[in-house]
Length: 174
Image (tube, rainbow, N blue to C red):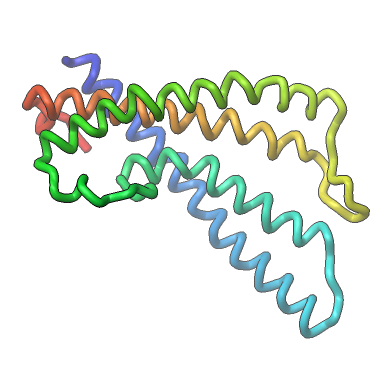
């Protein structure tokens, strides 16, 4: 039990730190979008690099921030029945869902994206558009990184759910 609780605390702290850092990218994204709108509509000047930077930042926020969202239960959920369940039944749903869907899916994405990232790095992949951003392989490397973080938080969710099922969840520091 002590190892489960220690792991949960580790994963929660990691998600908290990474999520806090990634949250700053939303401010950067807002600034980039405002700049793009200003230059495109008022100055009648558009930049491919600025447009690509917007979706690069959004991709990083989404991929790297997913574990943080899971930690706070702010991810998308079809909540038709779940909200009416008791906390123990919710723990069962989270436990089974993590083991059957979340953890295997994260593992598949991590493993299958390795070749994708390595190939992009080897060729030094850049934007195919003139004036686009270099180093697209860096963005592609965020795919396995984001899913590793999500896997770690998914394992913490499974552990936390197991403790709740066993009636030991109050002992874990959030």
